[in-house]
Amino acid sequence: TDKARPLLVTGGAGFIGSAVVRQAVARGLRVVNLDALTYAACPANVASVADSDLYTFEHADIRDRAALDRIFARHRPGTVMHLAAESHVDRSIDGPGAFIDTNVMGTYTLLEAARAHWQAEGRPDDFRFHHISTDEVYGSLGTDGLFTEDTPYDPRSPYSASKASSDHLVRAWGETYGLPVVLTNCSNNYGPFHFPEKLIPVVIIRALDGHEIPIYGAGENVRDWLYVEDHADALLTVAARGQVGRSYNIGGNAERRNIDLVRAICGILDEMRPAAAPYGDQIVFVADRPGHDARYAIDASRIRDELGWKPSVTLDEGLRRTVRWYLDNEDWWRALMTRDGVGKRLGRA
Ligand code: NAD
Image (tube, rainbow, N blue to C red; front, side):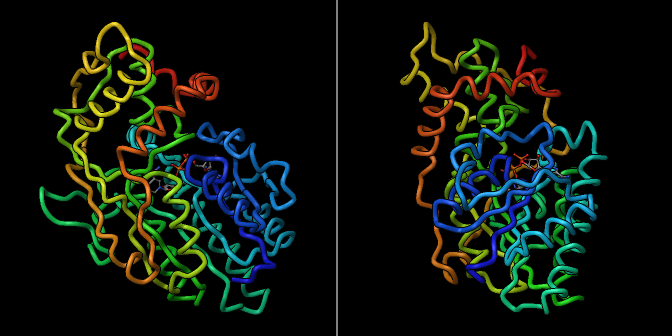
């Protein structure tokens, strides 16, 4: 990609987008962060780069074509990394509309703005539209098997269906209009700045606050976990060197049953912030999430073999860093607990 042209990151005030922004600036790349600042955004996540000459913030919604056109014309990005989305599965079950609006219509609008910009620039070969998606588009696995890039799509929640739709749009814009697209599908991320309503922060916060720690069903669901800084590194690798038109699966090589993950977090807390009783005593089992996928697991051999990328942080090490970060940054997550609908998920069930 053209070094002189900035990277346009959508959703850069969110969890993963902010990790991409911080790493990109650290590597000396010019970055434009486009974010609508929804309930899930947190400008503090990018405070460490806010004063850098390499960094610009654009407050805009990806559904607003006129705003996108102005931003593309002003910054003339060489690469778009598209992370802006509604991202929380439980919220997609309670209210799917916002997921269709942002993840489907928003991606469509961004694709059209990117295509107009790319055409106006003379269709440069080195332009990239990098779409960031999830392994949840592949549906659910049994006890064996792994998702590859060729696994048929079988989304089962409103969230994953909206992300699958956006993936199809991106591929279609690549095939139909020749827009140089690349896609990644990643497993569950975790790490510093993870929004407090997500599983790992919920466990840490409820443990510390002396509340019950709810686990869906019997806790048998298996997820693969990837440390967010490793994901950001993988994304910058794919944006720079990924082959046009290709998808890359990204995983952490760290499958865990939810119950084992939660017990591991409680064990780390017992060590770092000992309480009267082990935190594991607070675990309770609650009615399962409707349509809860049994298992996700990733075959990440393509990104390893083609681009030489593999995760660098083990789950045990990543969990320790994450728990440490939550213990040291209580002001950050306490402030977010007053946001729309978040306290409800963290209060006594
Ligand atoms: P997040 O919810 O933390 O952040 C999303 C960001 O997008 C927020 O800053 C929000 O303000 C912004 N945004 C939402 N709607 C917008 C709109 N209409 N216009 C402009 N900005 C908007 O999400 P995340 O967990 O960082 O996920 C980022 C991306 O990665 C998403 O596309 C998600 O589907 C994908 N993904 C996430 C995971 C995960 O484990 N978190 C795993 C795989 C893929």
